[in-house]
Image 1 (cartoon, rainbow, N blue to C red):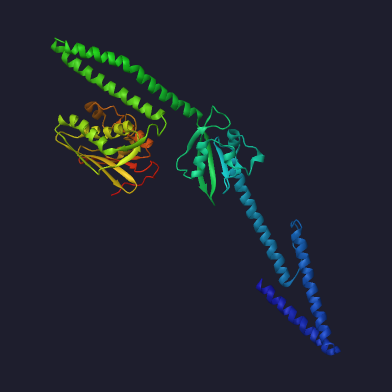
Image 2 (image 1 turned 180 degrees about the horizontal axis):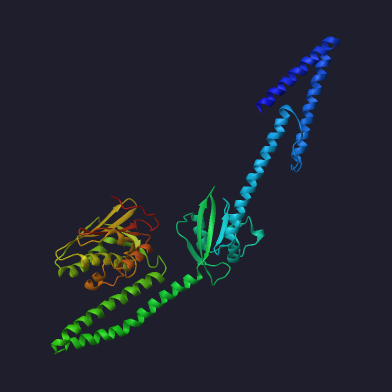
Length: 434
């Protein structure tokens, strides 16, 4: 472009020189300079007109032929157009590929602009939510009006998916996962989880029903076993009766834990919650644990900051904290030490249970809250545990917007820490303070 500019300057200077010479020869310098300027201006206007006509056309033809600066301008614009066309075709190919890929998905995909209005969706989303082409530009909450979705969408915390009934088919269950991208745009992935939801509901109902149905016959069996053991006069039957009573007691504990888990899963979060003082609750749990620890001559200490309280359900928190303390009693050797501690740091309240038992490897920590998970297959049989205690703890803490942190070293013991919000149960969690 710079070379063409220099050539154009030379052309202008040459034109002025020739006009000056001719003007001097005919003694009409002003008129010849004026005519030369008019010709040069007219020629540039003609080039501009050609450029305008070419740009306003379909621009599929070659650029106008010209020389100098205008020739370089025409060529530069033409090459720029071709490069832009190639980039546009490549981008369109990528978009078409993405649309073909998302169209093949069984999950619905919805793109929203920064205002939360529908921008694009795939066929699966159209099938699940009933969108039409004319709905583009409409707010998504006009089509998904469930209050839980509206609150979830407006709060802006999309770390967890939302499961709600389908707005189009009441018998279906949909899961919505929202992700932010770009300039506050949002991507919604809609998954049909109806079958998974029904299977999970069947599992919960089965566990609840079987647990309730087993309780009555097991009570009868336990009663007869106790009567027979008390009236036993044959020494050979003493050991079998003792083992049967132990297993009967273990079955009763298992059924009680299953019923407790079933209630935690089926009742709504926040049910019967109120402001609860933790001091008296922990004193009660300590007294209960002391009875169990007396046989093993263990020491249990309680160090707590007074007058700490949380919003929660007393029965559920008692069950969670008690499970942690009783587990420590079971898995701590004789004359061991168990420390209960309650304190506050910032917006959180911490309750920890520390023991000097055998401990376990860190690889087990992610699985400890799973149902019936055993670090050692022989541990539960020796202690009479059900394998559901930490699962109950996890469910209770989740219902209280809290979390459980676990630390353990083999041969040194374990620390189980509950982190609870100190105010209304809505404060976000953060890592445990050192």
